[in-house]
Image 1 (cartoon, rainbow, N blue to C red):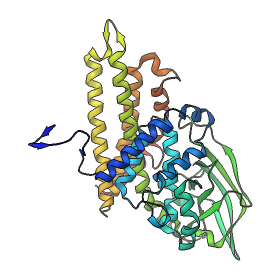
Image 2: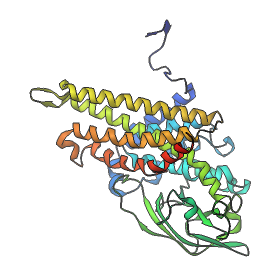
Image 3: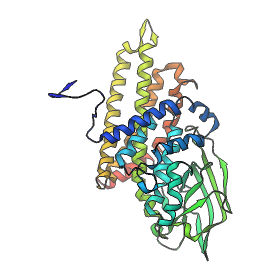
Image 4: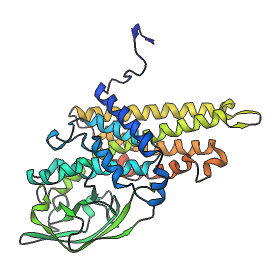
Length: 392
């Protein structure tokens, strides 16, 4: 294929943001999606969780250690590699599976990698990377979501341990996780930004329980829970990082989390367009395929352009982060834009599937339900727009 006087091989890199190593990872994840996720995930939707042996396979293939040190089994790649993983898992059409993995890698265990002591990293990271221990992050509460300063769970120091009391809500991986990064107030009298700490709570610790599994609108193959802490005794050495620095750790990782969600959303949107193109080119109405209707093909062309724009916005925000720049503005733009756009895409793609789009047997019906949370989780669109507005 000729391009601008240069000969470019089919399948060669088409983006300046990615290296050959990134593209090799993309191919590997895409193969895994086709062989290990798509044939089985309908059952996982019914079961309400992703089987542990599947997560172990992802660990064996290196998907859980992309950004982590080689000493623990990681591959020490960058933010762009995380985007590749999130985008390709999003393209699977089973976003409950995608978020199960991505919470483990980029929203929960990342706190251990960033702030953990040497002993904590040595103890937990090898099993985390191998998929032997799955991690959840417990920040959100019934009355505190994006407002991290508003959390009410407390942690009181008593000798060589802390005592936790409170509740957490909407915790992804909450039912089946082995390890939880739990935010709690250690000094209610301190400034809100200096009152929160993070603790490593293992399943089975006295006073910690899963109150109930939550029944969700979408992401049905992702287990989500309400958690309870009643005089939960946590060893002092399970304090993650410094006491009173939890708020900053959470806010710092929000940029990574929002980049991941943006990439995942654009993977979902692209998969929806691909599915719908296949459908409208074969489904006949009024004597011709739906693709022959100008309104339909032009709308799909418009959506394809918007998705390409969203994808490039995510790539650029991730590239800025990988280069060490402060990308809070760009990441917030990407999260807001992509979270809304994926829902716009799903609405029209389901519409173009007609009655079949409303049936539970169709992929687009599931994808439409799954996408709804993308404008909520990780920072609602309204919160993201405020972050952008502060930086205009």
